[in-house]
Image 1 (cartoon, rainbow, N blue to C red):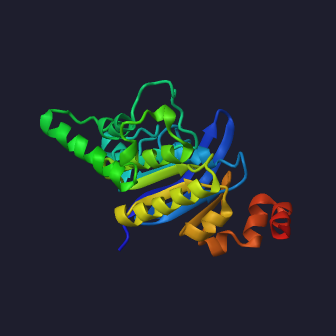
Image 2 (image 1 turned 120 degrees about the horizontal axis):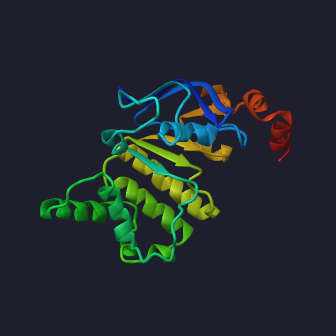
Length: 254
């Protein structure tokens, strides 16, 4: 039986005086991949930021692994350890002389572990294992400023793997990759989902990818317009309600 990882109930979030997300409810189970789709400015990123505790919510409830979040959205340490987040753009000053090994190790350090020698050995083993799993062991001593886009995404997945996670949230994570690198990223992501039993919540504009890989789809334009399997949520009627009839006519003509 699948375990409930995330439950969102009647969530409403404001950005200043603007109601960016209104009365949204859904749930995620372990081992499933749910995609958020919708027009630009429709509240997709706001929804994710509220789940992560970056934005406070006006009303509604968010429960992660059975634990309700506070009204301000503060994530206690035990929940932060269970969640990994890959943003659309990995913002780091590439002039910083940080190696891949050091970056992946931050995924262990951020959990607040004390690092006596025994834990230091565990950390080193975890970093090596994570890099090996994403086929990036050869990059361990390379500076992050010298990585390609595809290599960076692969290393960030290693960062997620260095400590066991339950929920992986992606905001257009493969943005900036070419077709080959994007395909390789998704192939690796879904292998890891099966192995790790991750629940994945991802924002995507690539409807073909969503149809091919995702279990469920949330159609968001401030409110939750529809949700269900890709066959249901990405039907012409559903997409017309979400994006408008011109969008559907354009995509059918191409």
